[in-house]
Length: 372
Image (cartoon, rainbow, N blue to C red; front, top):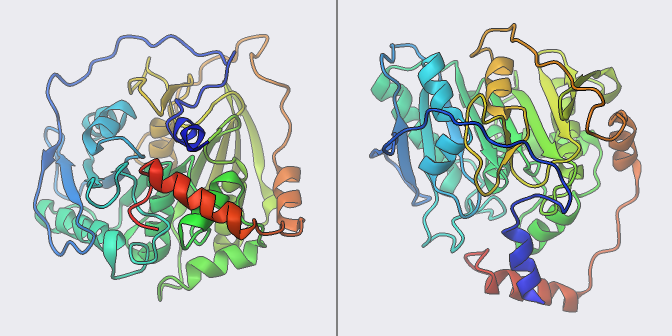
């Protein structure tokens, strides 16, 4: 049965019958545009990769990009479109990379207490990379942003919680809210379904992770409704977490219908994109930026470009594609009732010890964890 777990974790995110848009040719680098750079301290034993666009100016912004399981820092930076946007908009790129010695499937260890605590492990290494970038290249420390996919999305949530003073904004793609897991068993259960907590409880988890009292980074959350790896209710939990931190009501959201996506926004502090026919991966529009790859999915909408616009890195006004008629997605339904329902349902019964042992064995056999 553990083979099924492996297949699930390595899924390309597409359900049978899901329609995709054919990729269009785009200018891509002929050589790896990222270079490895030294930094210290490195308690998490990670690698640091950097891309500096041509003509980078002092005081430029910094975007930190965290890859998912089985991906490399450079490949994800290019395929997701961030490399092209850095060249276009003039910001520096930092791409931390996991090592196989830390995690056999090169996932960031977003569930390991030793790696998600302020001042320790992988979180401290990423913070050290950011400080190195800002000091070495004279970047604007007030315009540092972070985003990641899947395990990288979960580690993005970790960084925003443990080092919020470093970031002006963040973007969580197919990720998991901070505080959802403290061990392997929690991690798998959270991927299946986010823990059921109130917005206040989710917010308290972040407030307890550092001495920071605000203001909090603005947040962009993206998730495919057909994600077979990380349940979409993790996006709803992330919304609850950040709504509490920003002091906004879930019902204050404004809804916007886009080609292939539904956007909810709470002004300039928080936004949620739900993609009805997307599986597990980063949505791109390869006719704009990015290149389809495993876990990087053609969706006709660029998460990278829209995050950059939300963060203030791109012009506020952007040409909108006309919505085709009929729209090839299910009829729109507001996500707010689902969010509120998820937050009021009673917690489910904990799985049995026997099942728990099976889960841990399966994860270890799949190479998804460093230790159990």
